[in-house]
Image (cartoon, rainbow, N blue to C red; front, top):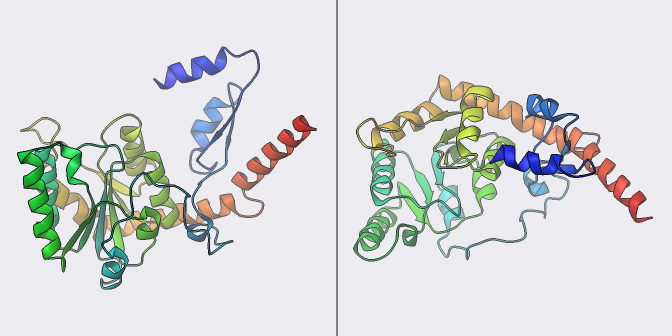
Length: 281
């Protein structure tokens, strides 16, 4: 799929300009590999200023959301938790998990005995009896909200930036991956499809800001509760976890420098806008 996209660009009569949501320091090798083939410029991370450069504290929203805001006060719940104690779990807007996987995630989170905030919509697994069982599971967890809270939606960048959050269990979509780097938080990589496997590889082996879950040998495409517990404990632990947090902080600083005055992303964007102005003139 990636090859086909670039083949299409190479068929153009002119050299196309591609702006990407990344920054030079994060993917320097990949950007160098494309140099001369595609005029590609990194202008990211594209997140609200309040969570990155801090130039505008009022800039806290992306401007649009796919889902209605939750009526559950997750911010108040987060405020009641200790620093870096909460496991935040989200698989994005499009991932549909099988019931067995939902049950394993729930079991792992409960048994790990750490507070967790899980973004999940029961309707994602279909209709009928299975959906009813999952709704009952959610209701049960929310009744015991001292440990866990499940919400259908939240402001992810706001949650990740909260001082009580210590780990992000993520499907590794690119936006979520960048947000984890921007706030400097360790990731338990739980990829599902497309580029998510590649992003998980980068998180674990290149940027070294997280650990990737391993699929069960007994059941195809299932990550068991024990594996989830192992990875969360590693990401929040004192040894590997400390290393992940240190690396995540490094990328956080580099991301802020990239979008700051004179940073690589700021320069790339200003250069593009200047060229566009000349074209329009």
